[in-house]
Image 1 (cartoon, rainbow, N blue to C red):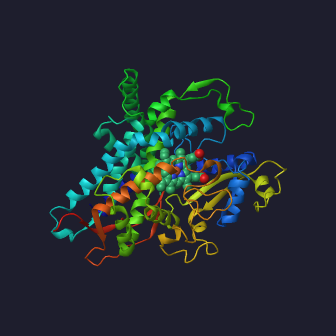
Image 2 (image 1 turned 180 degrees about the vertical axis):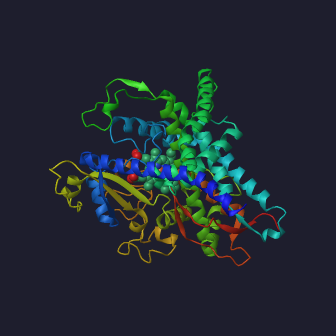
Image 3 (image 1 turned 90 degrees about the vertical axis):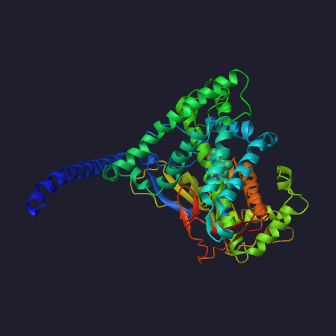
Length: 498
Ligand code: HEM
């Protein structure tokens, strides 16, 4: 095309872009002005970053009342317009939602019911990995394990959530939607804060904004089918959706988070939007965290073959090749120590956030950011950021904190008795949080990581790829802290000579 002919074309393209940018700048500056006119209560002040384990304990345990709320997530506004357990303020609705998850689904007496689903997921993973290795010359080629793991864990979690009859096609579509949101949204979360960023990247923003309605279209018919089956008495294993259908939450939203709220007030069923949001939370919280923990642990087992052999020995001795049961998992101290050491070094949730009243922060001895001149004594909100990884690598609490050394969690080791949930007296690590909002999925997460890891170590040997690639332990922070470069390892079946 001639240069002269390009000019009108470029002008045609450039003018709308410039107009859009001008409008967005105007909207941004108006939003900023409006923000500055708003009362201070709603404006978060500076972040306060905490790395000291003793301060974390005082905040989350001793001053739990003040440290029980998280900031609002930077989701698109139309992301259901409703709360999940994670985002709902401390109060009766939070108690109802969290109590339902813990008592209705994750209660220790119920976990045994999930065993068939867990066994099928683990067998599916081993079969899938074996068939991807078959045909490769003596498994000289390296395998990327993350996708296999993600598919197996997601299938398990989807069946726990939506019922064991949920269709494979629906599960794969959900896996794609939820997975892509979790892995990309945080990277793009700046989009949530600025109108101009949203306009410039409108395609991506439209994709995020449209996600809730896409999820609803997928999830609501599954819930309706599940409800029909349960009504006819053939619901199979009770799933999370069954418990949500039976759940009643406080009727009056004004109750949420208020100290005066009573749990005896009128109750209502969940709306469709609330159900979709809670299902999304269940699928999201349950999957990448577990996958990430198994992947980090395998990476260390590749780097440290002697730890791998010790673990293999513990898993196989006396088992006669039986399937691993929950009871057996509990009797494998080295497996537990290995998982804890992995969580200490690579907590999948790397920061814990709390929204805190500045006066409360000052009252318990924390340093509140300086008050602006026009404060007038109004309530101000600080964002407290607890750096989970820094707490569990604290030099005053751990010997050689950057070393992968599972033995420290065994009897006689420096961390004997330290578990996944931080105790009330001392916090040395907090991969599942602490205080009122600690992770309600901790038990099931430890069991799932144990199941998958034990099967992968029992049935395969994990080694460095022969092409000279080493293992890259660089971290990548999205919703979860994952390996930046997915683990590639030489995987050899233990029972087949090649
Ligand atoms: C290795 C796996 C997992 C890790 C490392 C993990 C970690 C965490 C952490 C650090 C928190 C924040 C705690 C706090 O603020 O004090 C949290 C909260 C939460 N987790 Fe997990 N989690 C895992 C698995 C799960 C599973 C399997 C579920 C099941 C649905 C789950 C559901 C939740 C929920 C609902 C919350 C919010 C709790 C509340 O606000 O009351 N997580 N998790």
